[in-house]
Image (cartoon, rainbow, N blue to C red; front, side, top):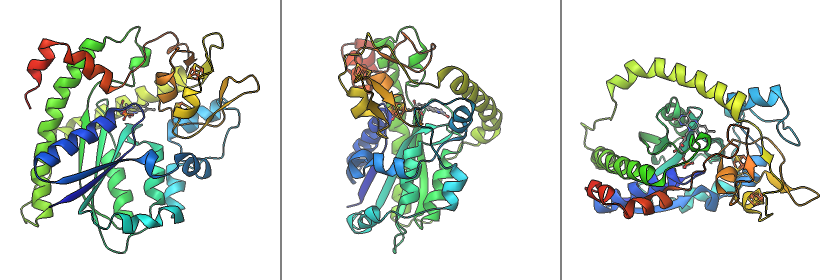
Length: 338
Ligand SMILES: Cc1cc2nc3c(=O)[nH]c(=O)nc-3n(C[C@H](O)[C@H](O)[C@H](O)COP(=O)(O)O)c2cc1C
Ligand code: SF4
Ligand code: SF4
C-alpha cells in the first residue's frame, strides 16, 4: 500500500480543508494517508523569531513606516536562500518519514509564493540521504504566481524528487475582511461547488501519481497551456493590485480597547508568536508578521483591525462554519455529487 504524509500550514483553515479532501480521495483510491499540521510538527515561534523571511511587499511597508513595536532585521527570500541553514531539531525527520512513499507540502499562497513560515520550514529541512518523492499543494484566491516554481526549486535544492503540484481556489477568505458582511450561506454553497471541483482535480492528480509511483513511463503532467498565455498579464496586474492594497490599506495592527475582553485568543492563535500583552494587558504586536489574518479573524469581539478598511467589517469564520450553513441548505446538498 502506498503511504503518504501531507504536511500543511493553514492560517484560516482553507488549506487544512484542502489537505483533508486530498486525504479523503487518496484513501478512496487505496492509499494510506497521514495529515500533519506544521504547527504540531515544529515550534513556529522559534523557527520564525530566529530566522524570519519576509516577502517584498512586507519589506516595503516596514521600510515606509514602523508597523511593529520592534522592527526586525529580517531576511529577504534571496538572502534566506543564500544562507540555508539546516535545523538540528528537524534532523530526526529523515527517520520519521522513512516509511512514507510520498510527502506533500501544503500552504496558502501569500504574494505568489508559499506562506513565509512554510518557506522557512522548507529551507530548514535537512538534506535527506535517500531521495524521497514529494509534491506541493496550495490554496489561493485565483493567482498562485510563482508558488509551484518556488516549491520545486526549494524542494529539489533539498535533494527531494519533486513530482508535481496541486492547487485549488475555494472561497475568497482573504478579502472577507474588507466586506461589509459575509453571507455564510452563499459562501457555503460556493465552498461546496469548489469542493466538487477540487475532488475532480485531486482524482486526476492521483491517476498521475499512480503512474509516477508505479514507474509507468508515460506519466503525464497537469499543465493548462492557457494558464501560460493568460497567466503573465494577470499576474502583473494582480501583483500590482495586491501590493497597493496591502501597503496602503491593510498593513497595521490596531485594537479597540473598549471592545477587547482580554481573552488572549489572538496571543495564542498567532502562528509566529508575535503578539504579547502590554502593561495594561492589551495585545500588542511585537515584530513584523506575514499578515496571515488569523488574529483578526479569530478575535471574538472584532476588537482588532488592520486599517480602517478592515474596521467593523466581516470576518472569515473558517470552512467548517460555511459547510455547516450549506448543510442546512437543499441547493448545496444537491451539488454534493461525490
Ligand atoms: C497576506 C496574504 C497574501 C495573499 N496573497 C495571495 C496571492 O498572491 N494570490 C492569491 O491568489 N491569494 C492570495 N491570498 C489568499 C490566500 O492564499 C487564500 O485565502 C488561502 O486559501 C488561505 O488559506 P488558509 O485558510 O489555509 O490560510 C493571500 C492571503 C493573505 C492573507
Ligand atoms: S500578528 Fe496576526 S496577522 Fe500577523 S502573523 Fe500573527 S496572527 Fe497572523
Ligand atoms: S482576541 Fe480580541 S478580545 Fe481577545 S485579547 Fe485579542 S483583541 Fe482582545
